[in-house]
Amino acid sequence: MKRVGIIGVGEYLPKKILTNADLEKMVATSDEWITTRTGIKQRRLVSSHEAASDLAINAAKEALKDAGIKPQGLDLIIVATITPDMQFPSTACFVQAALGAKNAVCFDISAACAGFVYAIVVAQQFIARGTYKNALVVGTEVLSSITDWEDRSTCVLFGDGAGAAVLSEVKSGGILSTYLGGDGSLADLLMLPGGGSRNPATHKTIDKRLHYLKMEGNEIFKSAVKIMTHTAQIALKQAGLKCSDIDLVIPHQANVRIIMAMAKRLGLPEEKIYLNIEKYGNMSSASIAIALCEAVRIGRIKKGDIILLDAFGAGLVWGACLIKW
Ligand code: ACO
Image (cartoon, rainbow, N blue to C red; front, side, top):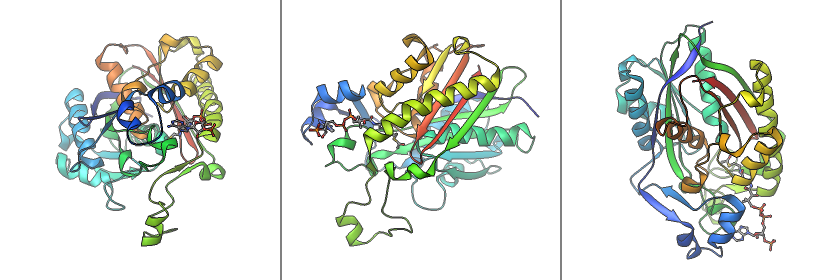
């Protein structure tokens, strides 16, 4: 088996900013409530012409440049998203065409906020076995397209963006361990009920607002803390490492209280947790991807550092990945 690592990262955030003050004018909420309950101050939103693939393409170009790989050198493109451009073809196909990555196999993964970690693990399998050499993994979301802007319990939480990583064989370091899990019995806690084959889009489904995401925030909150802690512990155990060996955790950015509760359970100091939720909110599969890119760019991640990616999301699904940078 080959050793696999991330050799380039990229990100793209749409220009438009929606602040908590803007939301105060849209629903019965306050900056104080949103900040203390979630840690979010603002989020980015796409403009009307931008879809998930447009964000993905920008992030992908940056990651390819960072990796020093031409689009034709890609063998595999995996896009993690719950807001694809359309039901089919896959968003990965649009990305492949726009990049001119004509040698790449392409498909999407639906694993909500754990999508980027799931996609990394899938890409790793192909590279480790020697099936493919270079893989592009993108987490991209236009969550504003499935957000009910009249529901204050959810509309304050989400944002749009994309992050990308190029994976390839590395001589040292790279992915040390991975762990994925899921519990479909908890699917009801967070879903987009309309528009699929269960409830195909009709005037009735639109009137019932089934084309917007529905969430039991409280229940997810409790599960998330337990799951993220457990997931981190398993990944560490598999790599034969301790919490104190971690230099930086890049957690899924759903709620600062979830992240800090997880850090406390793991006994990790605050300075070892990377947070950008304040600026972007929860961008589902794009959150970890963008946070990873940002942390690299600003020098929070240095060569030789031990990094933990730790995610959970709708499904419920979860995943962790320990990387020596
Ligand atoms: N502004 C003001 N008040 C609000 C708002 C708002 N935006 N939203 C809810 N409230 C009110 C509620 O109506 C409730 O009022 P009541 O006590 O009079 O009934 C009160 O605030 C408390 O509501 P809770 O839902 O209990 O608030 P909680 O502290 O649980 O915070 C939150 C809600 C932020 C959603 C939290 O539960 C959370 O972060 N959950 C996890 C979300 C998550 O991680 N999702 C999964 C990932 S996303 C993905 O996979 C796509």
